[in-house]
Figure 1 (cartoon, one colour):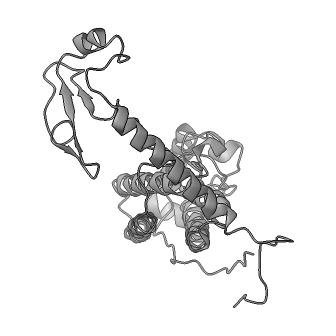
Figure 2 (tube, rainbow, N blue to C red):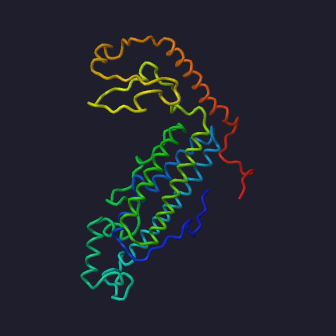
Figure 3 (cartoon, one colour):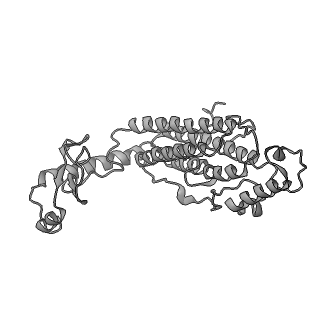
Length: 313
């Protein structure tokens, strides 16, 4: 259940209209890395998490709700930046707020032109209102959402999502000198870091959580690090121990020769019989564990989503 409170989580302010930056800020309203995408991603992920991980369901719903709050902050900021554009700009008197940052009719026409050039849909279709579109006018799309039904996979997707969103806010800060907007963007950027650490802690609390999903890696193809570009740089990503797996990388200096000699890796020189049996045993164990997490948590008899007796305000 959602209950809307009209007070923003952070009091968004702007010092002057700026339709050009309003258009850029649409990226965080209806863009691929924006607040709507994050809110819907965590919201949809939460449903699959409720039965096996009710604590993670709670966390995902909390963060999703906060992302909707951030969406409201971004939308409010955009609307304030458009003051004087949506419907009143051409008729505005010289002493109006928008004229305080421009000089004369030519400047007034110029700012209309700039808003139209950046995104014609902004004032022609949406009438200067805020809709779920990005800075190019492309409508928000559900394909922005990553929800895969495995919580360890979803949480890793969320770490990437928060990282990208933080970077977008950093870039946006470069395109405005409004101190009030900088404060708002700083707040939103910092909350991305908080969410990152929350998702990171949630992932760590699920053990085992590697490899992602259920099945173990096939030991026949795990260790090879191929030299696929001339002069490949050596480092901890292709030499030494594979972190946390108790095995070392095998550097394949000549991949073409290796593939030909092994007949497309169907006849490997090493005997992996023992490792394959261990992987098969692990697959069965992990399958049973993952399946039991859901089955054991499912209530007997009539199923209900909420327990109103335990609900607290």
